[in-house]
Length: 205
Image 1 (cartoon, rainbow, N blue to C red):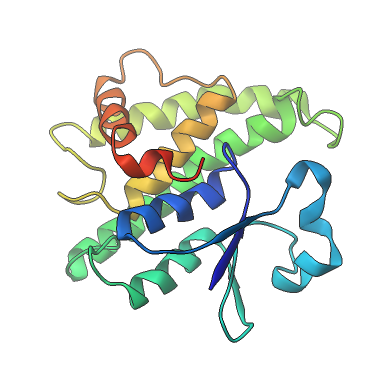
Image 2: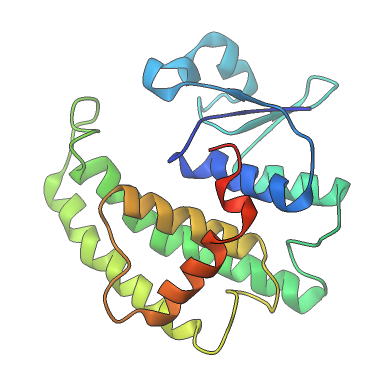
């Protein structure tokens, strides 16, 4: 198997790198340079018809895309340590927090990146008002998650899971966009410090 990805701060390939590091899986990664348009090459479009990263190429030539889908596949091959939950309730809780983080927090950060960041202005027709409007939305969702983290070490269960990986890479991508963890979100800041101290946080940056 081989992984096609991109270096930090690209959040989706980083999710897989952290997951692989937590599992101790030996998975070579080939960098697809987004800045050079390599993700839109005919070669890469055969791996992922949407022209995105990451993409996992299996030994038989089949491919999988979408970071969570890739990690679910790897979880099935390497079940320990379990990163999608240990029992039916935990599996549901992990999935719940993956969806909440992607659909609420990451969506807001993505709108800021697409419509309010000067680095995308040259390649995308921006709606600046939409981008700026998502900055307070990002902060509001952070405050919600901060409340949910009260008295908890990790987001979905008592263990570090894929839900933490999704939140970790989202918060770090937002920091790259100059979207800080809001003042007053002490639980979220403490959680971020804990997950950032894990060796997997720096996996193949």
